[in-house]
Length: 251
Ligand SMILES: [Zn+2]
Image (cartoon, rainbow, N blue to C red; front, side, top):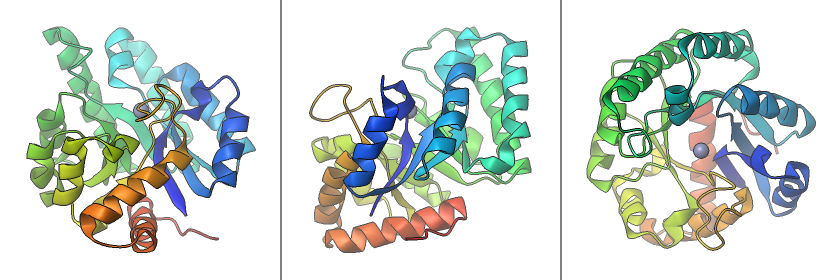
């Protein structure tokens, strides 16, 4: 069983074909993560059509930096109105790679805090982007009583701090060849590991052609690092998924 907690298949021209392909190749669960008002609606639509897709709605930090406050406020209202239909809030967080000016960074932080507050109020796990902002993400998130899933977390030196705070680490398919991510797997306890594709991004083989089923390569690598067999890793990740998202996998 393959579980993908972070994907954006709606960015493919024909997402239904790709989702079908994923299902045929053993993917049981995909969390599609919205990025902005337009893609949040695509996530809602696609999750109604496809039973393996669970919706998470969010506002990507790079888009937060580009949007005006009333637009963001309105979208958070859209998200909270549907909160019971969602498996999580995401993709949200901070990004200091694409956004570098002080004013925009402060704006990202302000809204990230607001979204963390919503995840606490509504008791929804939150799927967090932290590119080049890992320390601030961990610091801000620890003040809230929420379940945090660090997606595509790429900072080995801060992994221990994140896991000490009980944050889940979602390992991207790049772990197949990236030494930094391999170290992160090593530092993360088995009960805090999750897997993701970030499809169509971050394909370790063909650029921008990532799909959930390619997580099979991550599972092989994780099993090798942890000295276990793939079956045990899959079972552990399924357990972690059930605990993190408070949902029972029926299969
Ligand atoms: Zn993403």
